[in-house]
Structures are given as structure tokens and as C-alpha cells.
Length: 140
Image (cartoon, rainbow, N blue to C red):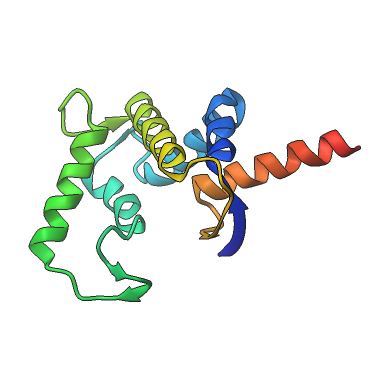
């Protein structure tokens, strides 16, 4: 985990950079697809959904959530990814919903810089790394 400064533009620019975004999505999808069948089952997606920590914290303090409520939230999130309602998420569905979520975060964040603690392999961390690389290229 590291503390980084980013804004909505950092995220939008990452998503609009098809090469960088597609590489990150393919990498994450490949890591989640543990049986390598080219689709993500609910069980495979659950690890990713749990990493979002939707209810497990309250102002940074872990709390004991209601297991039924958490299961309902994870089910709802899975349905958001499963566009064709076939019980599995393919790469295109994963990419489309990830893009949608990233752009929603950018919109909610706005264009004033914020400081955030980011997981090392997160999409937000990859967005910051991409921006940092672009800045270094401009300076050289």
C-alpha cells in the first residue's frame, strides 16, 4: 500500500489510454480466472468484490457486518458485471464494468487533487503510475 495524490483526470486519462487500461484489465482478469476457462464465476469474482471492502470499514475501523447484507451486496455487484445474466463474467463484461466504475469514481472525485492510500495492484495505483510515467517522459 502507498499514499498517492490523484484526481479525476488521473483516472479518466488512464481509462482513455486503451493500451494501458486494456493491459491492466487483462492482467487483473487473468489473475481472477483461477481455472483459466476465460470467464469469471461468482466464486472467482468474490475475491475481487471482497477487496472493495464495501461495508467492512467505518471511517477506517473494521466493523462486524451482517453476513446476509454483505452477501446481498456482493450478489448485486456481480450482477452489475454479468451484463448478459448468464451467471459468469467474460473479459468484455469485466472490462466494460471496470471502465464504468472507474469513470464513476473520477466523476465523484472531481478535478481537485486528493491524497489516498492505494493497494499496490489496484487500478487506481496503475492510473497514478501511468500519469507519473507520462510526466517523466515529458520532462526528459
